[in-house]
Length: 85
Ligand SMILES: [Ca+2]
Image (cartoon, rainbow, N blue to C red; front, side):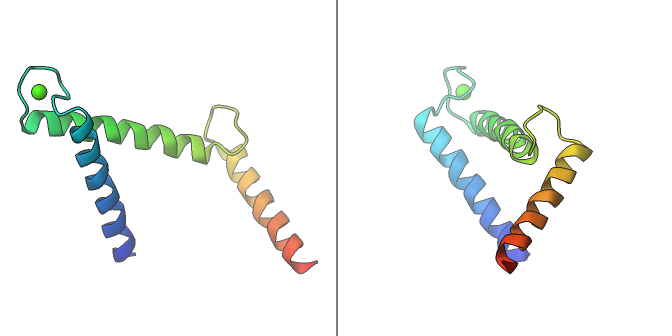
């Protein structure tokens, strides 16, 4: 679990560096400083939230709710059945 967390942090850190590399003045105030890094981190946090929501929205109805959990259970059951055959 600890290793996974470190990996995720490394990916996020790499993402921040890449974002700042592409657009160093992220908040467009004419200076490149720690505030730009904060803007980049905020944007990435938003991106991650949207992506996580779209991954969790298994039945693609635009909401993450119990129906998606049921969909996940159905998928796992289906997968297990296939393996058993
Ligand atoms: Ca700036």
